[in-house]
Length: 169
Image (cartoon, rainbow, N blue to C red; front, side, top):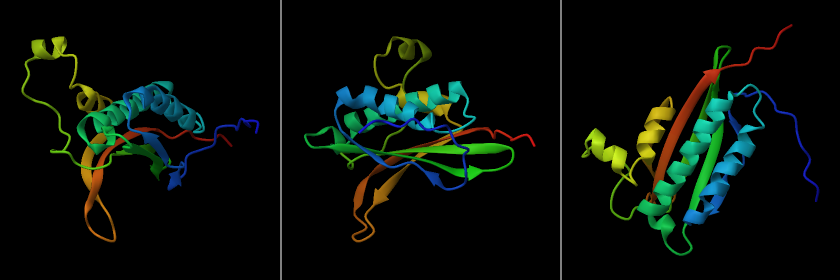
């Protein structure tokens, strides 16, 4: 079936993109980033640097899920949800949520045990620091099943706020 290109449309409160479910493999990271960019291309007026930052945050949250949860095990998955929960005359909030398959041992958190020099040399552990730097707000929460209240996974969410494109009359 041919792909039909659509013109970007304005954000509106409650807009949601289809949830995307990915295999929990490191090789999937580039796909996560590319599909995030594709989805954001549907949004009119979103700044290019925000697209870059949100795509980077999506791939970092995905990688964090693969490394630190059951998502990285065979048959593990990671879900990505994207929405615009708040749109006003002045600004739009884009919300990214990345949900893993459940805890292995601990909640994601920014590592704080390194000096600035150690961070410059570190090969790992910077993902949540990047999200903290690029997102307007971010956090984590447990995701529990509605029928069992059993913890099903951890959500890393990040919000990005940008000026709403105003139409001229």
